[in-house]
Amino acid sequence: MATGAATLALGATVGAAESEAAAAGGPIYLTIDTGWMNYAEQMAEILHRHKVVGTCFVANEATYRGDKTLDDGWRDFWRARAAEGFRFGSHTWRHWYFRGDAGADKVKYVQWGNEHSEELDATGVSRELHQPVERIKQLTGHDWLPLWRAPGGKTTTRVLDFARQAGFRHQGWTEAGFLGDELPSDRFPNKELLGRALRNIRSGDVLLLHWGIRDRQDKFVNVLDELLSGLLDKGFRFEHLPTTLT
Image (cartoon, rainbow, N blue to C red; front, side, top):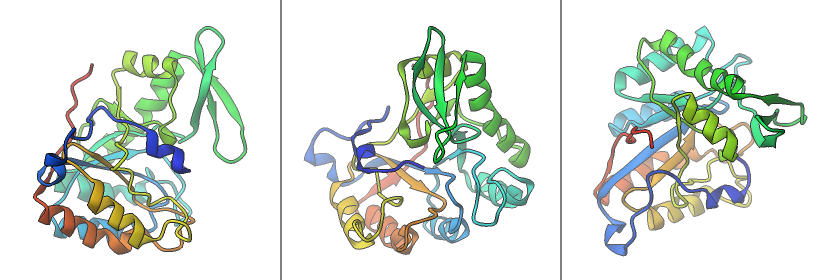
């Protein structure tokens, strides 16, 4: 999961519209990362009710149930999302963070929380990106997109190149699309995040959510229904991300 307000500066392949005229109406793109999965079913019910689908970026992360997001116990959940029309991209297998290029031909890959790290070459990066999407294909029977999202949105020049060699284009999110569901709710209450999103989202924005956050007290899912209603009332259309490699 991404942390900190620094993520607000991250761009995306699909950019926000350039004028105020795009404030209402037009396509927007929902993306959902795995996360803690503690309100995944509640989110899924709300999204289904609004007929909203998007792209799931999947990693094999620990969940509130004590298992992992790509274990067999989540098979029915992922199959249901695929049947609804969700698509899948890679969020890496272990959900570690790329912290810099190392030597002549490797990248530093760091485990969140304890700073354990490895150095991956192109083959190692390819394996890290392919494992989660090959697993989601096993679970759902549906193929995956040539898209990936780095944990925390943190990339390096070399890892982006390694990913392109492996057939993946990196997909970030737009500034207005950072909905803040992972931020501490004492500093970023739901009402504030909701208001900001409804004011600022424009045609072309890429929205970021998670299927669960471990340590946010006031869960953003509590305002998801209001957010979707507000965006749809403005005439926005939730569409699938373009997937052309560049």
